[in-house]
Every structure is written in structure tokens, then in C-alpha cells.
Image (cartoon, rainbow, N blue to C red; front, top):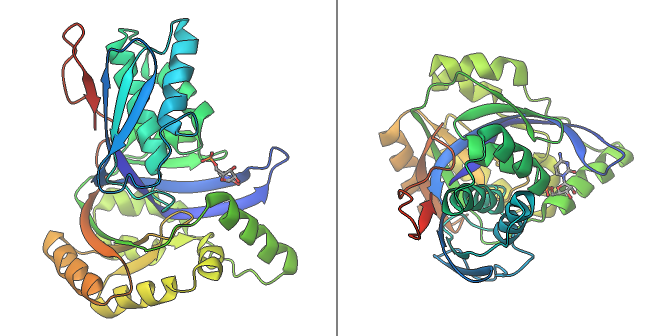
Length: 304
Ligand code: C5P
């Protein structure tokens, strides 16, 4: 299951349910977690992979919640052994937990032979988190509501980005709360992402057309909580990225490249600059959660 970035993210007012009204363009990128689901007598979860440190392997984990929710909906016991291999960093603005939940829904649906429709899985995904429907969907999509209502965009793939991973983490609720605080104090700096022009720019496949449209209303709040991100953004600019922004609630930064070669050059330069933990070239507009192994009876079902 892929990570996501938000090419543009426009945050409206806080709603009575505590969530903020959003308009965003989600874009799936080729940094993947995988989930393996195997038959078991009860729900068990374990984690591996280089980004699994400190991730809870219990009911706090969104993959656990996804298996419980799907079993409940189907009226069966959540009898599955899940192994989540984490390469997407946690609390990074990349929706890694949402990716794991989406993959778990798909893998358990296959393992338990439920054959839910995409619409049914998407409905369950929205109950798990605002970004989970997009993790199922992938490619590029317009997200509205709290982010869970998706409109597919006819975007071509073939985009090239660099993800600059941070040493620290940011809590999504804390970043939204900081934005509320800035707005209440009148010291916010509206980014006013040029969202309406993004679908056509994505469709054109022209990175020079997309570059000036990147924007994220959460960026000033993320920068206030993690001022070191200014150095990362500056490093991307110096290295010659077409544009850069904080991904979602951060602290990962995403930089737009002209092509794959440019992305590799940028990643090397940004990574060498020391302002981030690591910098990876990734492809953008990739498919969402996918079943990797077929479902012969009683064999594991893996999603990636
Ligand atoms: O939906 P999800 O569980 O990923 O949201 C995590 C937190 O992010 C919410 O509890 C809320 O504080 C914040 N959030 C928000 N508005 C959104 C999405 C998330 O305020 N549209």
C-alpha cells in the first residue's frame, strides 16, 4: 500500500465534530508498506520493517482496528494473523497507518472470502480514518469532507518526487490545533493553495505547470511546531527542485522533480545536505492497495 502526499491542501473551518472541512488533492507515491494476512485462531498482529520501531501491535494500531471492523461487519470472528512490514515512517504526514488499514481491509476481505465491493470497502475505510479511502484508491484524487469523500482525477502517472524524511514526528491533531491557534490569534499565513487548477495540471503531465500550484494550509502550523523544516525546504530549493512543500501535517517534505533522473539528483543533494534523515526518489500517481498473492484456500493473502 502506498504512502500519500497532498499536492494541494486547503483547510476550512473546524466542524462541530472536531474535524476540519478539507479540499485536497491526494497523490499516491511509491513508498510502500505491506500487510500479510494468514489464517489464525484469533487476531494477532506483529510488525517488521525499518520503520516499525515504536509502533503498537495492539488495538491502537489501525490495521488491528481494520480487521476488527471488517469481521464485525461480516458477522465473523477476526481470526487472522497480520504481519505489517513498515517502510512508511510513522507520524510523518504520509498516511502510513491509513495505508496499513487499507491493506488489512483488502487482505482480510480476500482471506475470509467476503468479496465486498469497492464501495463497501471504501465505506468501512472512511470509518477508520480520513485518509484510509484514498489509500485504497491510490493514483490521484480530490478529497473533500474531512478528506474521506473522493473524486477520482484523470491524472496521468509518471510523476517524480523526492521525499525528505525527518528525524522527528508530528502529531496530526497537534498540527491542526496549532493552525486553529494561529487562526484565532490572526497570525496565520493563508497559503491559499490554487487547488482548482491542480487537476488540469496533473492531467497535462507537465511538472512545470504543476510546480507553482503546490500549497498546503497546514504548512505554517507544521513549521511552527518543527522549525527545522525550513532548512529542509531551503535545501530542496537550493538543490533545484521545481517546488517543495510539507506533506500533509508533516514533517516529511515533498519536492517535485522534472523526471526520474532529476529526482535521483535531488535526492542525493538533499540527503547529503544533512537537513533531513533520508531523501528518497519516488514515483507519483501510483496504484492504491493491491493484492499481491492469489487466494488459494488457507494460504496467506498479502497486500502492498
Ligand atoms: O481521520 P484521522 O483519524 O486521520 O484524523 C486524525 C486527527 O486529525 C483528527 O482527530 C483531527 O484532530 C485531525 N483532523 C482534522 N480534520 C480533518 C482530518 C483530521 O482536524 N479533516
